[in-house]
Amino acid sequence: MGELTIGAFARASRLSPKALRLYDELGLLAPARVDGTTGYRYYVEAQLPRARLVAWLRRVGMPLARIGEVCDLYETDPPAAGLVIGAYWARVETETAARRDLVTFLVDQLSGNPAGKGVDEMSEMRMRYAAGTDRGMVRPVNQDTAYAGSRLLAVADGFGDDGARASGAAIDALVALEESVRGADVLNGLADAVDRVNRSNREGSSGDSGESGTTLTAMLWTGSRLALVHVGDTRAYLLRGGEVSRITHDHTLVQSMIDAGSLTAEEATSHPQRALLLRALDGSADHARPDLRLHDAVPGDRYLLCSDGLFTVVGPDDIRRVLTTAAEPADAVSELIALALAGGGPDNVACAVADAVTV
Image (cartoon, rainbow, N blue to C red):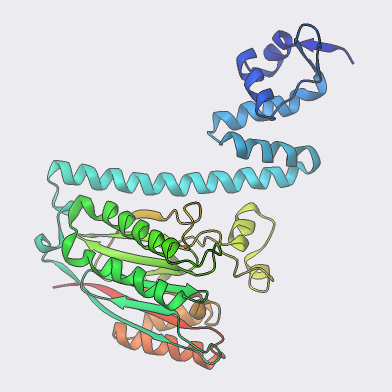
């Protein structure tokens, strides 16, 4: 098979010589041979599929480090590489939707649209709420924390030796925002609070990375929208029009495998690493990046936030039944916790429920 100069290979692959030199330096696409005297790079036709894949993935905006992983996988298992690309794009669409919500919110704020005004200026809708936790039937201490107030709904699931303090500190940091943050500042306020909690966990650590920390899912009411912050595997559900949907995405190893198509949701329930978190407030800057988005609320919505001690024990059909039939949020909280305990209560349980109602 004949060799191609970098110029000929660039034309065939639709990559510029400059890009080929960069990809060589990054280890993405090494030439078949480099002349020891002139330093000229030479390629072979067999490298064209990888080069074209690199070009396509760059066009969809995939980070270079991720492109290398996909290309390596493509050479041994093309279908698996396709699944990884699909999972990446699903994540991009989720993040794009969150940014679209934020743009809409900012437009409302700057244009004076009442939908973006603070809660004090919205008299047609309010929240009814309740929260509760239980140690469960197995754990020696309760490291879950739940909170429900007129503007805030939050659940945190602590882990490690200092997990109870970590989950409590996360909720306390958000409770402080109920009266101090309004309007366009709400997402920044949530992000800053999460950052403070994570720094506190890092400073209070004994030095063993990831030893203690917490997950966190919370919604802060702002006008006719709920600002959502989410890190880890606590969850938020919405009951609307009789249908229950999950509005958070677990930051776990098994969820990433589901996204990539290498694991089914049913298989995930018994996977030996189902509790392994990819993101949490554990003091690590790399793991603490929260999901932040705005969610439109309408009268009749019912929201459930809960720890994994609930949703891993109580099935989706029972969750839907309780959310649909319970007359008040407090009734829903009590019944859901009772179901988790009846199912063996292998973990701490925390949940918070709120209804959006017209005044």
